[in-house]
Amino acid sequence: MQQQIVGYHQDEECHWVAQLVCGHFQHVRHDPPWTVREWVTTDLGRQQHLGMLLSCKKCDREEPVDAI
Image (tube, rainbow, N blue to C red; front, side, top):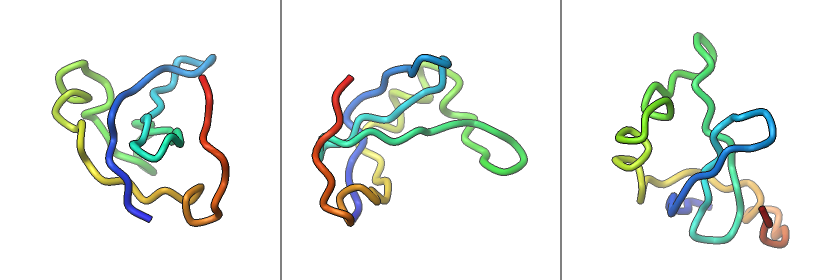
């Protein structure tokens, strides 16, 4: 299910995690060459991607919302 990004936080290893409108969290790593998400590395890039849709597998599995 597609869900919008509404915010971000960093996990214990300082990787960026998107907070989705559904209440689930999803890592949004920049890990070239496998995952190229340079926008994750800057505040401006992250702000510009608020509202972007991500596929939420947790919604597909009907999992409970995440907590920080």
